Image 1 (cartoon, rainbow, N blue to C red):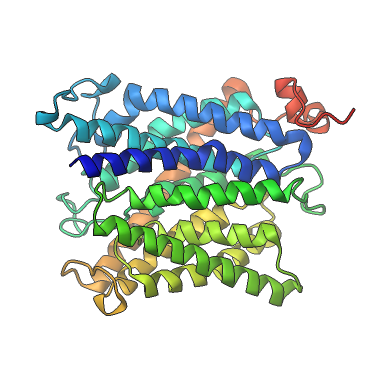
Image 2 (image 1 turned 180 degrees about the vertical axis):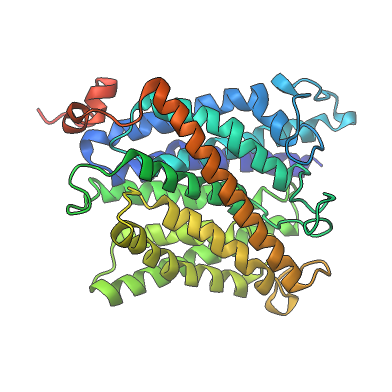
Length: 410
């Protein structure tokens, strides 16, 4: 038990490291220099706000009870959690803090779609409400014993459940769909789509991405909640999927555009990690390479669809990379979990039965997320506004919103 505790404590730190500073630097390097600090500020504020709200009610809604649709309010302010080790307190307290880091990074992922033109007040208020009203209920549905879990009495989920070890549906589908909805609502950056804005500092993008890669070992490897072979397998397939996606993204980019870029290869890495997240508890090395290798091409192509065909300014490609990646890995899990491919199998569940459940889980969570995101965004827009003023967009959000500059050019 002590080994399990030690590993989960380490995994918790790694997942927080994904947001602070990993995601913050990854996103920050992708925007213009005049908006760099605004992205760092948004990630930092979301981390603090989401943590407090998780303690207040988020954990209770997600994991506080056995209701079909939400966990209830019995564990508001973390009340009712036993404190003696004999009662399993250490395990539940670890669950609280480990899952808190997931509740931090999920809304933080969303902001990548609306950077450089959204008010700071909107982002904080929206993230707070969305974490409680969207993320926490979905986490309960899949992970907390809700109607999409194997323990539910709701057909066709009963006895099967949506298989999602670390958040392909709970994290990446919710974040990706919410990002797309918000990008449509807030509108594009000035000059879009005629002028595509290049990253101001690709080196920071790579540094942040490297932190995400390391932190993802805690994301997936910590989700079995034990220091055992399941955690080892999750680590291995996580790394292999990321590696395969790097290779396929760079190769496809070179074939399509004549050059393989640094920003491209690290984005491919993120696509591979998002794709393997739901399947890391089931697939083996071969399945991981297939999932990651395909994700490097699929997600890259979907960026073009969103940006150019649909002309939606999802600034940092949250839907195409995280949303589509999470969907891809979730759908492929039943077909690649076979023990003949080195996977863990499906525990006797027929492949097509599991596939149907995976599809229903994606569709249900996607529709709920789109609706609740739209409603919350309308409320927040009415209360604090959504799109920054033209003056703010010209001056940059760093100075206009926060009174600071990232770089002293004097």
